[in-house]
Length: 464
Ligand SMILES: Cc1ncc(COP(=O)(O)O)c(C=O)c1O
Image 1 (cartoon, rainbow, N blue to C red):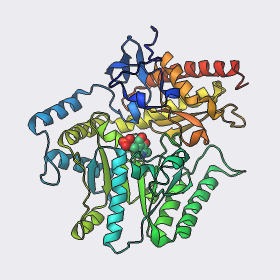
Image 2 (image 1 turned 120 degrees about the vertical axis):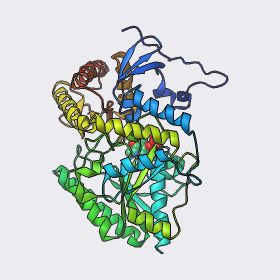
Image 3 (image 1 turned 30 degrees about the vertical axis):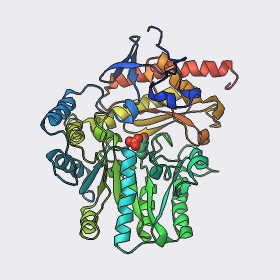
Image 4 (image 1 turned 180 degrees about the horizontal axis):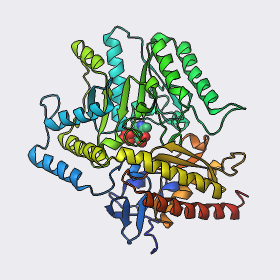
């Protein structure tokens, strides 16, 4: 491999420059300039090849350059570029709504399309609020969510995200949701099992509802499979039914943020794993646009949508809601995903990948935990496997791993929350088209990357 084209001393031009000029200097240096992509591979301007281990941002499920999707978007642009959903209907909107809701199944018969995950979560909360107001439940304003969690970056959704780093900057600006502990499975209190801990966190939901006053609570939002905020945490099965029953008991709506997990968990919706935990609303995004179109969706029961439409209606909209080109791309993405059984591949090759990563844990002293489901996995990094001691947060360990990954031909992801208080991990979420042999190549390169990191940490005295 030739030397990576580093931007370490990236100039700050008088005008313009790349997006990363906005990001923290400390951790965002050394980004490669990617000039070409094919399948799961990317090439930089010095000719280095990388495997995209995180599918862009856990979204590029079909990999790069899918001709069917590109053609569908181009054909739609040539035929009808844009109309506005409030004043005209178009076929790609109806086609995408049919595909997505049929796959989601009963209880999710209506779909509202926006431009991404944050907007879709925002819409979900606004929809529930408008429904509650229309039904005379005007005191229902409070949302409950998990700590840690991530629900997006609009002012509305960062108020839902469980990230203590946001407090100082935004807590005075927008009403933050009430946070309860996430059902984390790796570090358990006392002698608790993961299930006991999860059920205790479900009890925390009930306690929060009672403290706020049930009549003031609008909804509880959670990622059924965690994303970057928890490193692909999957709660024990009992958790999902438990929170559903609590929500039902108090007339509180359960929202699953499946922005990352939809299409990726090995089922169309992760919600399909836990029928007894069935949510009222599902939000999805990344997997339906797959990096080809900015798309997000809020799925809701026909009974609620139709009832609200007969009362006040649900009024918010954005210019690019159900954009025709995005919807046409989305239809092709769904067709490719289903016809090539990529959800099945997420389950099968995802299980293979996870097994290989678990084997790697036996060989690498800094792998503490391997978690996830389907093609949504994460590896937690530790200083000591036996004690689960974290590597000190000031070492920005996931970022160092990301930079070393580039040297070993891997694009890795690092975004820390809560200043690393819950630990640090790296996501292993390649495009769903990944073949078992390619998954093996990812693990081999990842092992070399981890080895280089462990050697450096040993030399620095950070691990033994
Ligand atoms: C679980 C979850 N919710 C919401 C979002 C926000 O989606 P977007 O970045 O498309 O606004 C993300 C993005 O990573 C996510 O992972």
